[in-house]
Image (cartoon, rainbow, N blue to C red; front, side, top):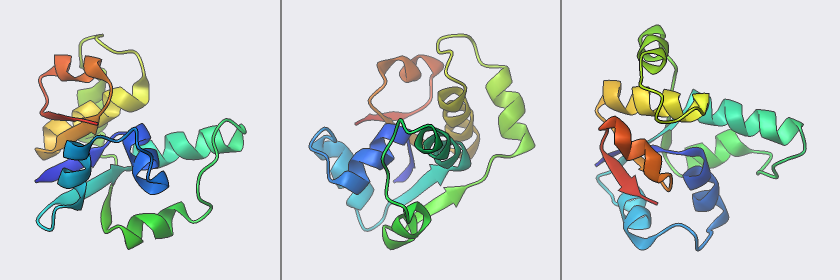
Length: 125
């Protein structure tokens, strides 16, 4: 399985939060899974952390390495694809994740039911 974690899913995973469902946990922890975290996610987290709206591990990058999560950079093609998406969702970070999941053939792990409207593969968080 090739997965892309939505921001809340990454945070739930790192905090061992019971909000993360069993199917998502199994997919993320499966030995054959490749799990990606977008640069958009780390950017969103760092902005909210700087504003005092979010408490996250100070070693977020190290935590990603420990969990064997792969960093997914934002490419110019991702940005163009995100801008061309229909307006099912206004959050620019989520729109970027949808564009990246589509372009890279990834399943987006999310608790946001609106993201499936884009036709990308999703796994319920």
